[in-house]
Image (cartoon, rainbow, N blue to C red; front, side, top):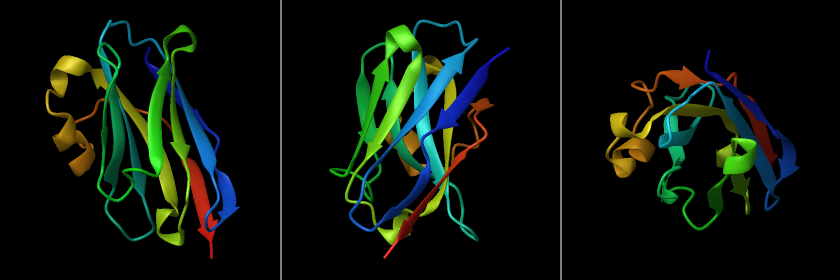
Length: 131
């Protein structure tokens, strides 16, 4: 059984930082696509960042590039999202999603999309940024 467990959300002031974690278990393929998505109240879910674990290739949406960093710790089966220079518009529920990498050959499409074709999801972690 595949499980994704996110943690690390919270409330910060504008300009602050947070690091989210996603622990993945049960997805026994060597190369995975792990992506972070976010959904603000009343808005569509959108991609934020993605990492291909086999090549360590990363992708970012335009709205977070240069502020967010996605990384992996293979030994811990964990993917991180380091978020800095947070703004109120970053307020959202953040979700981790995972699939075998071959299902998502285009990383740009992943971070520009809604993630509706991802099979495995975590429960989400809330990030709130106040001005």
